[in-house]
Image (tube, rainbow, N blue to C red; front, side, top):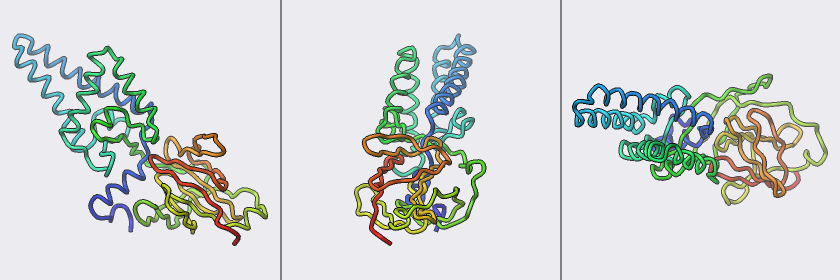
Length: 276
């Protein structure tokens, strides 16, 4: 069963779990395009109707409402179409609706105009500092929204592509091409152990075949090592021995017993289950 065949909100949850959070740079560029388009349209309407203040105010309001309508119904704006982003509901991946979209647009516009851009910088910082890694700023929290990158993931250059079953621990069993790299050097210790992962505090379960959590894919390679590969634009966060680093997109990383991997708002712990 694929995510596209799942019923109702389960399919929507599958889609948003797999989609990667939008990068800060692409969100900023989309924001600039949106402000340029909407403010230019509003300014032009106000200028043409300057002799009729009420008509000018109504025209500006219609521009704002149209912007919120597109965002609420389809999750798009001009900037988000250009940079391949979508705004979806944070909890199920569905459209956020007109009311929440209007709130989000109003917060961004007021935060930019009323504070001469200072409010926008503050909102951007709250997104960058989001502890879940999903880059949800204060305006996203108010609107219960989540900005995702909808560009198709491409395997890294020089990496073979093998179609194999993939298990998504939070949604359903999928089948999709998975980038596979050459395994690391075989060692006696790696070959002697079975591997398990514990997702979000649950009991560890043995990894058989391949597992997908969000944009990160894990598999036990032929020599017994557990390898993670992230095909999202930012990469999962690997926590090891008190230190943390981002996984490089499309590049395999060998995991160790006790490693923690954070992908979006999910966290898994790598465990050696014992000898084979």
